[in-house]
Each structure stands twice: as C-alpha cells, then as structure tokens.
Amino acid sequence: MPQSVGVVEGVSSDASRSITDSTCGNTPVSHELCYPTGRGNQAIGLEKRESGKLGKIFNSTDSGMKSGTPSSSVSIGVPNTNQVGCATSGGTSARLADPEFVQFIVQAHELIKASGVPNYKGCKIRIPSKFQVGYLENQLSDYEDKEVVEFLKFGFPIGRDRQVVGGIPVPNHRSVLDYPDHMDTYVDTEVSDKAIIGGFSENPFSSPPFFSPIGSTEKANSEDRRIIMDLSFPRGRSINDSIPKDSYLGQNIILTFPRIDELVELVRLKGQGCLLFKKDLRRAYRQIRIDVGEANLLGFTWRGNMFFDISLPMGLRSSALCCQRTTLCIQENGS
Image (cartoon, rainbow, N blue to C red):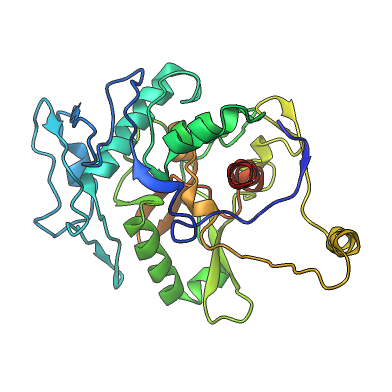
C-alpha cells in the first residue's frame, strides 16, 4: 500500500460514467445474499425476519412501504425507487426510497457481524455502489494496492483497533439545530441516494448502536452547509478514538495532501505557459461504501428517528485515507 500520497477529492458518477455504475457483480460470493440490479444478475431469494420487525419499526404511513409480512423468503427484483415510506416527525420526511435495499443491508450486517471478521475477509457479500468494480478489477490487475478493489467490492472497514461502547442517542450540535431545513434536505438526499439507511424508530440491528452528534459548517461561496458527523465525541470514548492515526488495519500509513509548494514545483518542471487544472468532484466520500458490518457504529438521530451511515462520513478519521486509496487507483486506471 502506498505510504505517502496526494489526495484527489473523489469521483462522481457524472464525472466518470465509464467506471461507476450500480452493480452486484456476477462472481460467486460466500453467502447467497446479493442485491440484484436487473442487469442480468440472478435475483437471489433474501430471507426475511419471521417477526417482520423491519417493516414495523419504520415510522411509515405509506402503503407502498412493505410492512414485513412473515414469509420464508422474498425474491427481489429491480428496485422501485419511486416507492417511498415517509416518517412525518417534526415536519420532515425521513424517506425510505427502497425498503428491500434496507432489508439487504441489515441482513448483510448480521451475517458479517456473526462471522467475526471484516466482510472482505469472511462473508464477502458484495455491497451495491456506483463503482463498476469488475471493470476496475480487470484494469488494475497489476496495481500494487490489491486490497483497494476488495474494499470497493465489500466495503472499507473503518479501521478500529478496539471496541467502543455506545447505545444512547446524543443531542446534535447547535450548528445543526439552528439550521433544521439544511439537515432535513441532507437526510432526504442521503436516504434517497442510499448513503444512509433510516429513519428507524428502534435499532434495526442485533448489535448495540453507537450514536454521534451531527454538526454543520458553512460552505465557501454557497448558501449550503456541510453536514459533519462528530465522530470524535465523546472525547476519549468516541469512534475516532478507536481508530489509530498512524495505521490502518495494522499497516503503517502516512497520509499527506497536496501542498502549494508541490504545485509550484510542477510549474517549474513543466515550464512557463504550462496549463494546470483543478477539479473538485462532488460527493467523493459518499460514493464509497463502508463495511456494513460496522454500520451500527455510525448512527445519528434526527427528529426522533435513527439513521445509520453506510458510506464514508465526513468526520470519520479514516475517511480521507479510504477516499485517497480509491482515487489513486482510479487515477492509475486513467493514466
């Protein structure tokens, strides 16, 4: 794995359609749990919980939101993203764009958690994302960072080296409470884009949840606000406290970012009149999946509902490294 590298701030599905697309893949996985896309993949039966708990714990009044009628299995077809369940708590709609997707994520979490090892090492359940991982895997057969493709298929572990204890929802920061409309928009967008799952009225996982407060900051030259999960709270007992600063999954790392001096050196090497360009790609972190076996640790609450991140959140200590490894492999593919 590269130890000292510069970061390119992600890849968007619009900016690079040749390497990003929703796919579950056609290669066999260790567990017969696969979220199909209707693009030639076989629809595999997804076992439902006999109690129908998932359907009941969503604060939903929409009949299109399945209530989880007891059944031995359900065959999943093409997701109907127009099917939306709404929770009308406090004036916002905590939308569930795809109930079957949520069911898949929760079941994947349970299988991975029961295995006792990260998804990429054990269950190897492919987590749907916007990356066409099969294409990347073929193009990067000689790439030195072999693990990054596995992480893109099965989700990046967040990199903890010890356990954390949570379970109690915590108040959000004033920087969010003072701008509720921004948070409402964020929640609706992220749920619709399948970057978070929710809103739940109770914990959907068998594992205890960990909740962190949400804050926000101003975006430069914009009326929008950047939503940040404060994963350094509470100090000494936070998720970030469980993630080493100088290693990831036992490997030493040195994370660096481009500096002005390096740009000056590029100009000097290329000569007067050379052309440089900078591209700031949207939603870089949000397109990269975490290992959903740890989704219970990335919880937050809003308007009385529980939500859980399944993509790299802004505020996670390891997010920059995971994003950097992803963009470097994409850069290698494009070189």
